Every structure is written in structure tokens, then in C-alpha cells.
Amino acid sequence: MVKDPTVLKIYVLHENDAWVEPLRAAFSALDLPYEEWFLSEGMLDLSTSPPDGVFYNRMSASSHTRGHRYAPELTAGILAWLESRGKRVVNNRSALRLELSKIAQYTALESHGIRTPFTIAAVGRDKIVSAAGKMTGPFITKHNRAGKGLGVKLFQDVGALTAHVDSPAFEDSVDGITLIQEYIRAPEPYVTRVEFVGGRFLYAVRVDTSLGFELCPSDVCQVDDAFCPVGETPTSEAAPRFQIIRDFTHPIVERYRRFIADNGIGIAGIEFITDASGVMYTYDVNTNTNYNPDAEAAAGIYGMRAIAAFLGSELKKLERFK
Image (cartoon, rainbow, N blue to C red; front, side):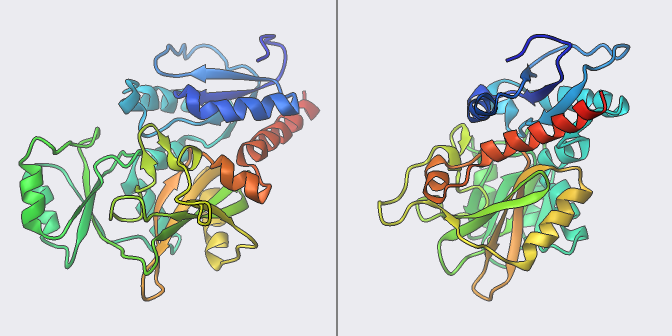
């Protein structure tokens, strides 16, 4: 990490060291100057000016589960400060807003003609139960401000949900909003995640969900303290849990590309599932994306290297005008 303040750098805003380690290695391999802003807590003097450089926001919606409850709020303020000074920000305030709210994600996706599962947001025990009564089949719950599969449960009927909400096992979302969402059953146990770096399609990965809970596609892969593409093991040697799809082509890629461009997102993973009728549902936009090393090694494509190279190219653009 370069300490000389006169050197143009890449600044990485985050609150989870483990998720940044592969990016550090990529920066080192490309000999790129960078500095980390660890935002579990901090102080922002609004009268000062930011340093020159490229700022990459990797703030996570699940930061509160690591004791960093207000890291996203602090990050939002810092991003506002950076953007007001005309700094180059990758994954800006708009991107952070989508990271922190499934409601914001779904409404933004729908505005781009991208189908999402039927979802009702509710605050309060009685409203959660009432929302479930509007579902016509099995449904799931999840936290609006989520990550790590927070609050994801599958229910067959309202009675089962009522018992859960009234039990000690019920955990409210950190923002108080619970989502009740139709359960999408896929004919085969997998979902697809489409990765973008620098606003461009990088690759799609097929994620085997057979070892996960029998849940909505969304968060079955989010286990413990990391999105499973960085840490899970294959189901067997013959069938790895994560497989990069060779030559993936689908009209949804262009829709996703336009969606992220319109929402200040430069780097993201977007997940979808297809039901038995062939209808595609998009259910998650992750602007703090991670990658599975085994799947990447098998395909010879590396997400963190692509991110580092993209940030390095953005830094070179600034150097030309310095």
C-alpha cells in the first residue's frame, strides 16, 4: 500500500478485511497504488477536500452482523462528499442505496422491464402476517437490508409464519422491514449469477442450490460470513457447486447492463432463477460481489483481477489530466 499522499491512488472503501484480500493480491500483481479506508467507524470533516484518485465502494449490507452497524451510513456520507467534489467513484451513492434495500433493488429492476418475484414489504408483526395472507402458495421471508441470507425462511402457509413470528427464533431486519416473497421453484436446483466489471459483462456462473435450504433461490448460497462463491466446496468432483458458463448469451445481459449503468453501478453480480414455465425472475443485486476461486481457475477467468485492471485503467485516465 502506497503511503505517499502525492501519488494518485485507488481508494477501497470497505468494512470486511476477508473480502478484500483477493483484491489486494490483484493490486499487487498489477503493481497498482492503493489505500484502504476501513469504515467500521470514522470521522468526516466536511470542510476538507478528498485526495485525488479513484474511489471504489465495497460497503456491505450485512456490515451490522460484524459489529459495524453504522458503516453504511458513514459510507453514504463519504460518497456524498466525494461526489460533491467531482471525484471518480465506482459504485456510487445510488449503488449503495440498492445494496442496502431489496425494495430499492426490485423497484429499480422493474422500472427497467426486469421481472422480480411478487414481494410485499411489511413492518410490524400483524402486517407481516397480513402480507403472507396475500400469497397464493409457498412463500419466503427475508430482510430488506440483507446479505448472508438474513431472515430467509420458507413457509407453506400463514399459520407456520404466524408461529415463527411469535417465537424467539424470529429476527427483525436491521431496518425493521421484512419482505414476504413468492417462492419460485426451479425445475432444476440451480440459479445463475451474472457478473459485471466496469459496466461490462464478465461471465455468468451456474450455482448449484441442492445443498442449500429449500428456499427462494436468492440467499441459499449466502452462508456464515461470506457469499459462498468465495468459500463453499463442490458437491462432488463431477459436479462442482459453481461453474462458469462458457459462451453465455441471453438478452437479459443487455438489460442488466443498462440497469447498472443507470444506477451508478460499475461492479456487481446479479442473480436470476427460471421457473418450470421458463419465466425468469431476478431477485438479487450484489454490488459487493465476490468470486469462487475454483470455478474461476477451471475457466481461466478471474473477477478480482478484472476489477483491479479496471480500476487501474480509471486511474490512468486521471493521470493523463494531472
